[in-house]
Image (tube, rainbow, N blue to C red; front, side, top):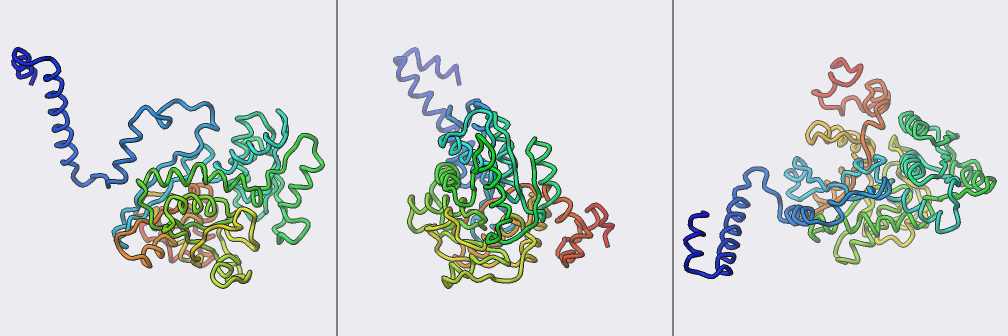
Length: 397
């Protein structure tokens, strides 16, 4: 090659040489791109890969933990995409610094507290089922605040232990309806009201939560898919993720379908189907999703339709993701993916459906991956046979 360039240089100007080299390198790159084989990327993911290789903010060093929130990978689920004929894509939110999608809201809630007068060394107080609290504890440590968490005593021990390990003061309280003055959210507000230099972040009705997904999650999905999104679906607790992502995607393309996924015991499926705040089913083993009211974060969300997903379907999907995709997730993530499959089946082949993997299944080891718990709840038969023998205490029974 260089001998050829030398000969050419003896008869052509230097500029001609540069043009020739440029052309030859382009040909070589095209040849390499065309030999991708079984792991060839889809066009949308290729565009994402090209943008990520530039000297942009993705590649630059991060300025502390807060600057690492977001930019999570978008993963194509091969088994379910092949099954439906659609691209089913999931945001791997366990790769946020605090391990869940709630890190996004946590960062924006703390910044909102600062904007509203919280002084250095102050206290952040929140009522949370776990993941928002874990995100807040990380952010508070990074930015120099104390963290106090009120949570229902129905949540997994792993979440409680994680919060305490991170330095948060945790108050597990009886799980009672929002209408009860002793609901964990009301207790959190009272604590903040009684504590100097403290701020109740109010994740359910503080729309800084929704803003985090308008500013971060929605744009990431749009960029990572190259603008090829036909539907977005996920369950909701506060409403911030669904409302924020949905609002951003609808702004880019009004034809994007936004579908709310709902567990048993929640009123949201019925509300977005018939307009009535009526519960479907008696209750759910999922944590942190489902709702008995319309929060300020969810109010006005551009929801096109809703899907009800029973617990057994969510549990079965969580184990499918572990056995077939290598992804260890909790039941809420299983619900999200089950909803994405249902949306894909309704849309038909050739569409792109996006959802979230909320966090890691390791946060639910004492429940979802506990054979005794599974048997007590009637879910043991949903576990793939190849996993039964490997679960702690499973013994292949």
